[in-house]
Image (tube, rainbow, N blue to C red; front, side, top):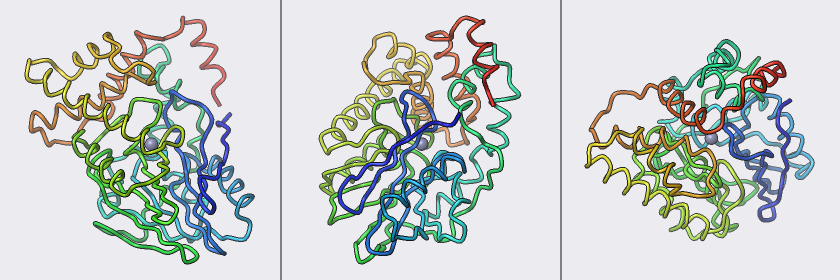
Length: 331
Ligand SMILES: [Zn+2]
């Protein structure tokens, strides 16, 4: 069973589609910007099935507007893998996102990680727990058709839409979508609300700089890549978290600690209470430590997931019986 979702109006003409559920992977927010008979989509859900649900919700709230343009905030599958459901649409992304796409795991690899791994091993258990709800079959990953660097201006039914490249930050090719008249920003995965982020490119200073750039636009509303809608104050407190985490990393690195040891210590101290998926600290801190070490070789994504999975496993793996029941329920 794929997750359910709801659509809400942020301001007139601008909607946010948010999947239900928290403290999990892959439930990304999408945007609908519709004015007159024109509509622009911001990101697609993870799968074609979820994209059908999103587009049906979009048609219901903006029946007169045809979505023939899609902006992709970055290359992660949970923001792009539904694009085949907009056949013929212009797909707009940064040039760096186009180049980054080949580094992403494929739908087939993710399907295998969920189905062909050992459910009694931390990584197999973790993939099933967080990705087992998605149907990754029949996905064709479409590349962007229009790319840019720096800034790109669009109009949707006469309303200004500004795209700003802010990567490398969360990934190498991030962009944010700004509607100046509506004082709204779609931030992609520059901003996570409610859960710890997992940053793959980094360093944290670049993510923080992207958040400051958003705040400089003076928005009233920020749609994060994951989690509920934020105000500028909400973004400021996320920025406080990023700055603190960068400081913690620098100090721990200076003391000779590893990224993993630092993640374990911060979790033990409960330094960031209330944020879900603390195991993601292992990923973001590994990225940060690679920058502190001056290591510019590509990261081993599977090894990063394995570190996170081991932390989650020791914290909340259910007894074996329950795991077997969960595995039996998978599609
Ligand atoms: Zn995401």
